[in-house]
Image (cartoon, rainbow, N blue to C red; front, side, top):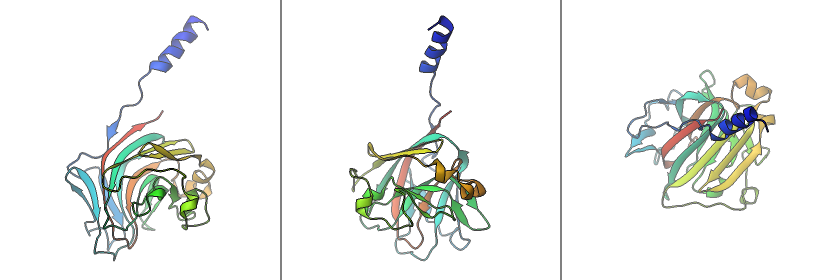
Length: 231
């Protein structure tokens, strides 16, 4: 290896990664917005509470999907956050990535990393909410139906405290881990960059969002949401 090539290699090896950026200030929902059907937007399901982003629809199942969407767009990135479920909640949530709101359809198109404390083995698997897709894409299934034997062989979930979730999106590859256990690690580019996703401008870049599933009575909290972009 000549000296110039060696210096280039050394620089690449020690060049700092992109800095981590917080997506939640711990006090307000500044930088986030609620999107849903017009009748659901003002119901106050998503709030900043005690240093967390909290969703609470207990006793109020009369709603459609309600998303809390971050204003910024991202392509390739690593996202880290913490999530806490509650035993009185049987609802479903999720972390949308590379997603895009369609105001005419009142729908958020894009892949979602599932967060489902009532059946925690589902957390970290990927469901695609894109209108033309709407099925599990990891594992690859025909629709929304999934059984425990189709999920990961190993997983860890703290039912009474905080759980760490990591999501890495780079090109067509998505990798997720829950409490240090890898749940998804797959090249999903054939789906995320297909004609439907290109039409919806989702799948390879877009917004991060938190989901409240339609008609669910959900109580959940998120905190320590941070991201670093991958170049």
